[in-house]
Amino acid sequence: MKGKHLIRIIFATVFAAGACFSQHAWQLNDGETFESEFVKVLGREALFRGADGRNVKVPLDQFSPESRRLIELEKPPELEFSFVNISDKKIFPAGINEKTQRPAEMRCLYGVKIKQRSAGKYNYELKLELFVIGQERLGDKYILLDSNEADFLLPEENGRRFEFRSDREVVLQNYTDNDDIRGEKYYGFLAIVTDERGEEVGMRASHDWLYENIGNLRNLSINNYMDDACLRTFPTRPKSTRY
Amino acid sequence: MRNSRKSFGVVKGASSGFMISLLIHAAAFLLAGMLVVFTVQHKEEKKFVPPKPVERPKMKLKKPKVKVKKTAKPKATTRIVTKVMRASMPDIQLPEMSGMGDGMGGGGGGFELDMDFGNLTALGSTRSIGNDLEGTYWDLKFTRGGVFSPMEGEEWREIFHKFFRTWNTSIFSKYYRSPQKLYTTFLVMPPTISALAPVAFGMSDDMASGGHWVVYYKGKIYHKEGITFRFWLGVDDSLAIRINKKVVVAGSFISPEDGESERAPKMYRSLWESESMDSEKYVIGSSLATVGDWVTLEPGVEYDMEVVISENASSGASFIVAVEEQGVEYPENSQGGPILPIFRTSELSRDQLDIIYKNLCEDEVCCTNGPIFRDF
Image (cartoon, rainbow over all chains, first blue to last red; front, top):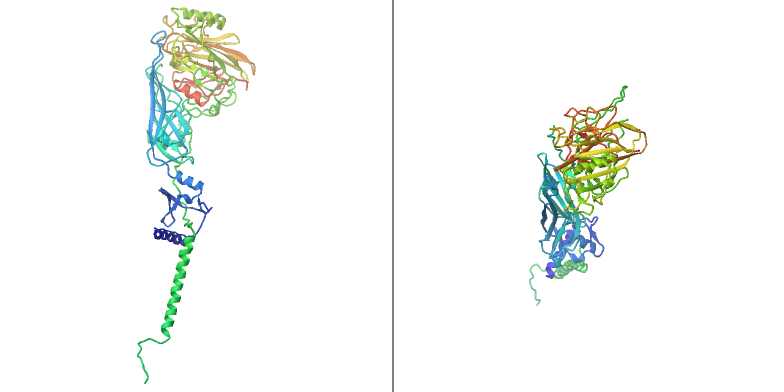
């Protein structure tokens, strides 16, 4: 054991002796810093890769609290997503006659369930962004039906789970006017989880193009119409059949 | 006798030197080894090679761009000696951001309007921006206390004829009035379900059905430079406008296929008639349009404007109020009629345009250009 430890130290010494020192990004308890590519955590040590491609292990307890926190952030949990769609068909009273009866609507609440499926603890705050997309019935434009953000943790006592449900009821209409089908329908969703640094930890999308255009999607507001690049556009205009 | 021993290659004295040399070298190696071992062992911390930092690939975010396609270039506005001005009415689908030029009352640039309208609908929003018309909703299917009590026969028509003579809203006081007011800068509800109005005014689910409702708007209008204009209405079921207590237009649904019929007589027949030859010739919305009387507003002077909109008992409803400015030539639509700007007291925001466009056919009216009825 002692021999192995000695060899490791000599390796490190030779490694260090042969290299030149420069600015450090990781900080040790004694104040010393270094820059290196973090590879992964192995038990109680952190693995780094040097410029020459060699790997170096450093005990976690040798790092400053801030660097240790960053190392732990570099080991995000693996997440599992389940989209939640609670829809209820609302039928209205007849009123004066069946012509004036309000057409039935779908009343919807959306959300997502997130579960950590990797082992180990992750005690840092995560942020969820959830986008729900609809589509107009008259044409082919899309609509941002709902958009939410939520901060959450994955504590052990909750089984490392988090469930989010929007408090905004989305109304989807479906009726006919002058032989045109009007209203909107559900199309898909995008859920992204990032850590406190803004780095993506996990993602689930019903359609890849939503994720590919997340930058544009983030610029939209609820009820905005958009095209397939998530750029804001006008809704499809009906054609006149009266002349 | 002397003893002599033969020695093989061993020089007396040389062996000790060799040994000394060996010892010295051994000591040197040992010292060197001790220096490495003991030096490292004393230092618990390791020194690490600082390799080059590795760049992590980051997702490249596309800079969002709003694409504006030019489907039609706006024509420059010109003044003609005969005092006929040509209006620039670009393609409605992607309207130009710029205004129409001098003498056309400003407009354009409405997309930058960044106001919190609250809950936004085609009949208005829950927040006033100041220069808007305030709307009140009565549902004539319910008593004042909210009990369902639908009208029968021609009672509906009689109520409105009575109202038309005095414009006194106390006529509706025995019916249910929504506590929710709405505020609007335009009068455009393209063809849609009749129940949209009670829903917009916050009626509950068990009360919000179509038919037999009335919306009354009132507010102040101005025009900075002064203007002579008239209203064009495309309505289902009926709409009337009064300015400074004078009725300037009263229209009702006129079928594009059948015209006025016994089955659907005009609401205000015998009470007000248009004097324009263009009335009931072109479709706006779901009805042949009614053309109003010419109205002149003096520069910067305040005028009271009242609008009453009613819906009978059909599945659909709509009202579109446009303006024709005297002396202006407008581009023609596919019907051969003018593409007129809608009445408005402010530029429309992008959100307001979305709400209008999703049910408004192209080629009927223009929502982004034309006069704005305000004093600034």
